[in-house]
Image (cartoon, rainbow, N blue to C red; front, top):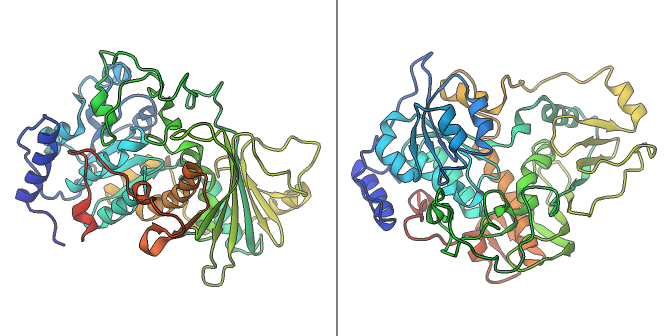
Length: 457
């Protein structure tokens, strides 16, 4: 399929904006050459408050030309810190008015709006950085992966651990044969914490109690592609993660960190099956209190099949037999069980070590050769250098990030349904149950239904 013409792009966005009663005739740029050597990038930020602070620090030194957020109060600090950046609530309007002034876009919104923001940016030829998880459903992940090639843009997902030296050690040690064959992996995360943590909270009732929309918030824009519903403070600003309509739970949130190292090192892809070993539900449409899932991955070339166990909430694996029992077992972590030796990380892959302690102390005195290039300055700088032609493609580009996200989202389907999932990755479908099509590809409201063009390519 050829790239959309100026006319087709204009008609596409005209339909979207008209549907949201915000139509302004767009002025599209068909393509952009890379920035001149040494020139600063013009960056736009969709989602200007909260976690976007990481982006401002990571992209320091570039031009911040636009800030877009549906909540004026949440974005107030960013608006004050960057007064020269133009302000918007609707990123569709921002792209209409400023597409010629923007080189690249950082998306730091709730999970359910990642896809729409990223896809529209990519369709306009903008490079994109999207916080993890990449998308809210599997069809969206595959579509963004296709779009990255189709529109020839530089992409990155914000699982910061993929830019660390630690994850490179994991892959190098495995490939050097230090662990031997790995057939078993355990990963666990202590959350969701419904009492102390700010990201998950059980509402007083289901559906959540309603309230008046705060005057600083555009509730309809916050909902984006999701069907309309009354406002509730149970959703915003942080606790949307607990509702499947908006977030992907603890698994979707942390698998892109905790499972990144085994996924990369072992050359995993989509699982063939995810089984529910034990799950403690709370309410339909809401994340479980805790879960234990078993992922089954087939052999990959000469690499054996892998069974991966994921635990969250109060569930976790027993301490490894190689673990020093005088020390507490980590509350979050990842264990790769090799037939020679095992490897342990924390919830992120940045500090790997071997077990037991004596093996680790001996091993660290003579580490294998470093073969994978190290990243300077973190994932944002890795992305910026690639855009400027000063470095290779980012490691968590959408070719990689879409597959990592899909792996976690197959598990999320098991959590959402409390059912074992047999996954036919080639045909993107669940084979042992009916009715999962609406989860694999979630319906979107009119004006937010992007991506069909590139999917047909």
